[in-house]
Image (cartoon, rainbow, N blue to C red):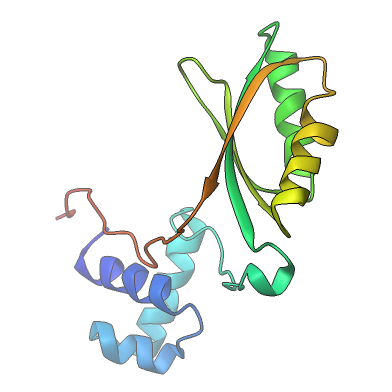
Length: 155
């Protein structure tokens, strides 16, 4: 990526709905050039999609938790199956595969603390492959709207 590509990616992370004319002006390129660069960034897999940020409270997810999970016996089939099953659970926002003592980290969003308890008891504790889990309620959740590019600039 060169400087212009970096500026395009940074601007689209902040506002994916920016009009192409405004994006082109921001990065100092013609709209047609800017549009072609965006298409190339998508084709190269650098831009993987455009997303709407949604208020979790409005979707009934006022309580968030991080749930660390250990599964046994460790096998690719079991890991892949649990991963797929967890992603299918409506309470699960994201899943991370981990190295170390825990195998997975589930980011969960639910209506309230009793709903979190129900999720833990009804959806996790009755799964035979889960040998242990522990949860932590999230008090605050922020994330960057735009990630800084840490790779060296090409030519």
